Image (tube, rainbow, N blue to C red; front, top):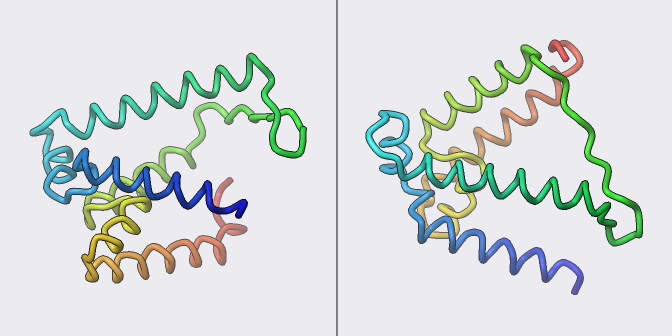
Amino acid sequence: MNLLKYIIVGFIFGIVLTKTEAVSWYRIYEMFQFQSFHMYGIIMTAIATGLIGIQIIKRNQWKDFNGNIFYIQDKEKGNVRYWMGGILFGLGWAMVGACPGPIFILLGSGFLSVGLILIGALFGTFLYGVLKDKLPH
């Protein structure tokens, strides 16, 4: 029963992304070709929402379900790993036309060929787990 709320939020998130066309390969293609503001508007709205939400959590010292105060560690400034990770993520996103969240939404919408993209994403995650100790952190 405790997981039900996460499943419901996931369904709502999927519906919102589908209705806003954020999972559309065409919209993603437009974004990477700088032909449309649509996806940039969605991304900027998500960033603004996240910034405001994090500030509310920090300033009001919200607690988790166990009663512990949320602690959000600051990121290191100007590190190469963020640039490299962002470039790799962006290249993968541009090549397949989907970032990790929409992969599951597209599968749920009946686009079974996206299963190959999911396999590639899982393999990339596994490969990172194997190589993470050898990578610059």
